[in-house]
Image (cartoon, rainbow, N blue to C red; front, side):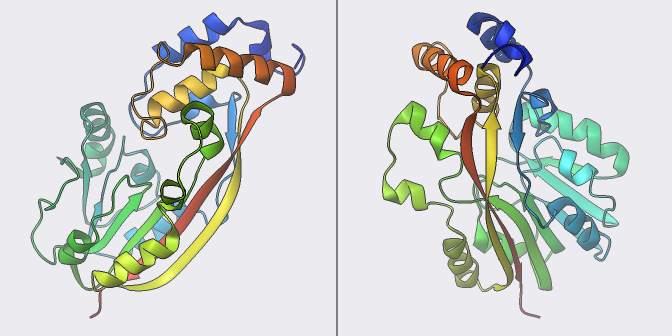
Length: 261
């Protein structure tokens, strides 16, 4: 890759890594990666579909809201809307963003039970949840209520994961399979009314983008630090400069499940 192909090629490995290490990673705003990484979006448009559903119900719960960006940008809210988040920097960011919109942000560590009464919500939503507690979701839904979620699918960005961690077992690669989500929802007494799955293309154009991504999406390479993986990062930097963007396959699925009336 020459300097005409991407501006980062003119900067050293150390400069790119230092910049990415210093960048704040609170919330789920990935605008820092603009021009440095690209991710193909699913065709269904989760945020638009989310807004349509929020405006049709009286009480809604957004689980693991991150910094609240997706909920705030949905274009509509239920009269009673509550969000949960467990990571302190995200709790603070979501509070600043969502409170002016009338959304209460509840600090919750994403462990059962959810801090809400039975049948409290018409709609429960979540974008890219780390863990899905299906029994708790079913408990807090009113009869006839729905759970609506976009989730990370199996072996997502595993080209990058396996670059640092080596080959993963078939059991690990199958985790987050949409069919397993269907079975878990049904076991909790919910009826799956929609399930869609797509594999999409992601590109990392410089090593800073890789460092920032792994700092922000902490479950990809658990415990990731630049110091621990510096030599592997340096090798990847040389590869990107020589061959062009590092390409990975991203998996996403959309699931909607209804509690019987």
